[in-house]
Amino acid sequence: MTRGFLARAKGHAAKDFMYDLPSERIACQPLGRRDSSKLLVAAVSDDQDAVSISHRRFSDIARIIPNNALLVLNDSKVIQARLPAVKDTGGKAEVLLLRPSGGCPPSLALQENSSSSRNIWTCMVGGKKLRRGSLLKVGPDRDIDVEIVQPVGGSVFDVRFGHWKEQKFGKTFADVIQTVGSTPLPPYIRRKPVESEMKNYQTVYAKHEGSVAAPTAGLHMSPSVLEELARNGVQTTTVTLHIGAGTFAPISGGHIGEHTMHSERIEVASENLKKIVHARKRGQPIVAMGTTAVRTLESLYWCGLRTLRGMPSSALITSQWEPYMVMDDQSQAMPDETDAFEALIDRHPETIGGETQLLIVPGYNFRTIDLLVTNFHQPESTLLMLVSAFLGGKEKLWTVYDNALANDYRFLSYGDSSILGPSKLLEEQLTR
View 1 (cartoon, helix red, strand yellow):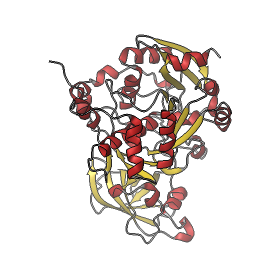
View 2: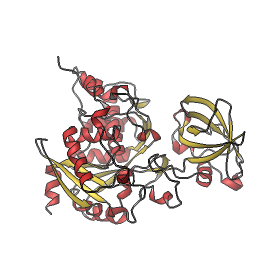
View 3: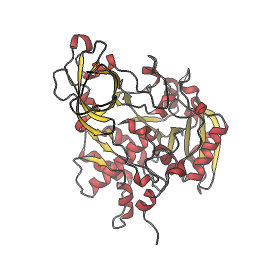
């Protein structure tokens, strides 16, 4: 008996996405120029049997992306989420902001003032013997009280931030963390952040604060490359997915079916989604700048599908297995992505906001993008599975990664880049 989409999705073994990544290949420092990184171009043949690979610089990407394309950027901005703290016993601790508690959008939570009772964040707290009611202090003079409200699991707690002096720290919580916090570098970069990280670990188009990890595919993008893309006729639009620390979590358990995908906040202006609809209707290629842009667009598709089918949509949440369960249900035809997006726009004429746990693994049917720009990801990670799904399977994934390793590419957040997609969209550009 043929297994359904859900069973096949859950059956992927974590060990099948393991590869040897030497520590010296992990980029721990940014390059002096954003767009000077290497760019691996992987063009998948029409029959999806072969991958053609060539090597460029990221500064060449404006001559590789088709001139009529629409480029989708994640404009989330990394917050200074790492806060040094001291316990009331005098022992050292550290508070890493993960997300506002209770599903509050970061844009609102960051604007809370000192007297607000809503300054509660879900945080990873480093320190021993922490429990409900434990007290910490942050700030250069230990003058901001922090209380553990309740445990969430492991080293994660809901934390309440107390009163602060506005003359010293500013009016809003955003001002506070900008004053006392530091850049939350990935766990595999084992050094303290320096002041320049506030600029380097941030895209040039970052706008909406809320991420605790950068949308790293966009770190290569420079103002000059964006200008060249515009001159060539490439349009751009933005979505917002606030990236959580869960993006660094390895697959838990032996199979992906045992893994719980982290939840992340998405917010998209309906006007921006209209641009994507119009581009799709005109046959323009959609280029996703990074896996977070992909997961945002695909999540919106599933929310739009529920809207078209008359399902409740007041809470726009995409669970990790929802797409595979829907694909297993053959009783209704799958809507076109433009229909799904237009249904969302009609229901939410200003802004579309919600949460996504979308997990993309091989066998997933992408509905919203044609080309993907992305860095090289950690072994046994959900991001590696997403890239494998987009390329059409593990064999083509290892062709790309083996080639990158053999050609001295730098890996992970500060590493080099790639652009992936069908040969009909890439090979013609490469001959120009």
